[in-house]
Length: 196
Image (cartoon, rainbow, N blue to C red; front, side, top):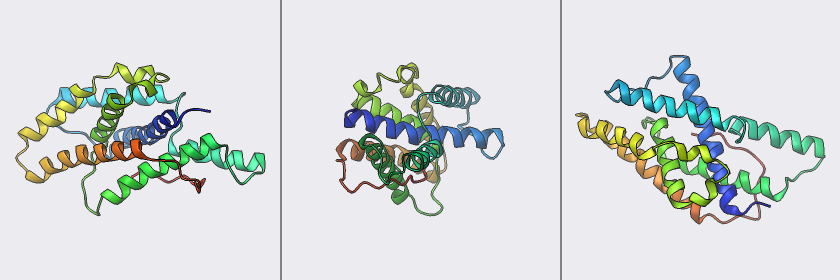
């Protein structure tokens, strides 16, 4: 069985892959467009998210795939509980979703690309050993990409946008801190929550 640190990494990547998939779908449907005031910034950020999504495809579930797996396993195995590793994965994933959900109020601005890089940079910095199974995560310069948001924040004249960028850092850091401290609950449920 994997150690909890590795399962926490997997749970975080389930969340991030789901964000990447939803982000790319919105970009391709022209429902969303990143604009940091610099075409190079916008292009590099979008390329990095496509890179992550491509590498995640065969190594990590997204939330929808995880739910299908859980439902299929429980149906085929004719059991009401999952193996401990998957119970732990769901528990950690659901806690990540809950932490984001309770931190946002109606009308709050959501900057998914910044959240993706903030979560990854902090988790890799804190728990680098746990990403050995995902070497492609180390191929991205997260600090450079996050620097683009800092530049945009420093050049932004609207105070609410400056605050939103700062808030993305704060909530991402809070999620990572709580994920690191999280202990497995013996009453873990096997439902999969949707991400923010």
